[in-house]
Length: 415
Image (cartoon, rainbow, N blue to C red; front, side, top):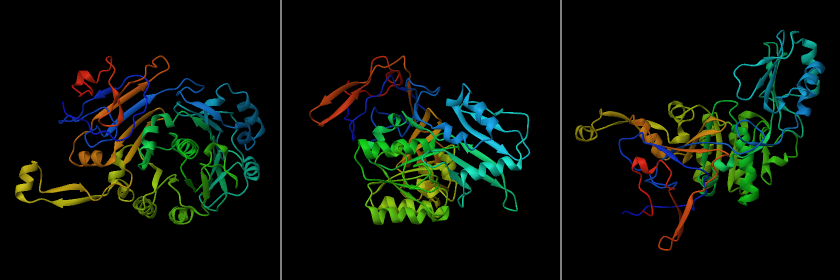
């Protein structure tokens, strides 16, 4: 039996792994990452705790956010049994106020009376000045208030987003953090990207003892105010005066403060994508987020495609085209990806992890990557059986007998 190429020490997964073979050429092994290993994995698991999606809320300080709302709405939400699931409150001029909750489509109207201009002005007085991105925070908390303005510059709507310090996310990617490669988190708004950044910053700084600098453009990761929220642990935070300056502050962080890890939220411009590549080329680990639903969204986005290596059109010779059984003009990845790992946050507790280089290459030729699923529930807590090999000098994990991996013909080591 052939040897497996193993790199980092394994982490202990609770429960089994179910693998789905979606490729014409099986090359799945049990360890991550290696050139032969599956380059995409799916993880859906929960941790016993307070929230429905399985994570444990550490702090939300909801009372501070409720002070922004009109008195009747504040009193109603204070007595709301689902307040722990509150996601945001919408205040739009001339419309009924609306509350939105985690895991629920649509929203719930809080009263029949519409929001008045006076109520919006009172809320604005509590919040204070909004930044150039029309965002503000509640000092000492993780909450965010975003404004909608009229053509005359008047505030006609507010989105009051609840910010929470939540634990349990890092368990899904701790092995990747220890591997010291850059990771890009991809997801739609509201799926929890910023919350994950916050906990990753704390774990990297306090548990893995890294020099971590957060480029916090809207003060969402470290909270509003000049003193960072305790949720980021010992990580340092650099604030950004204007959103358009984010890429400059990213470079400044590397040049002035000697970080081992730079964390940046909402990469959205070509200048920021180029700054990410510059930082990665200097040997600094990057943890970032971007809006999108799938890896294919980034590949097709000309502004952000450089994050995954970029795409170019290549013309093949006749012999090469015949050998590949393809057209003469094909799409290929242009360069190594800035982020070797990309995680699609499909849901708050359902993530898909790509080995970016291999996944991009397969998607460009129309193939589907292999998938590894890792369900975890409170009822199933059996750990992976660990084995040791003196020859390789590392620990490896042996597939439990009840796992479905063996049914798919996956190689086990040791046999």
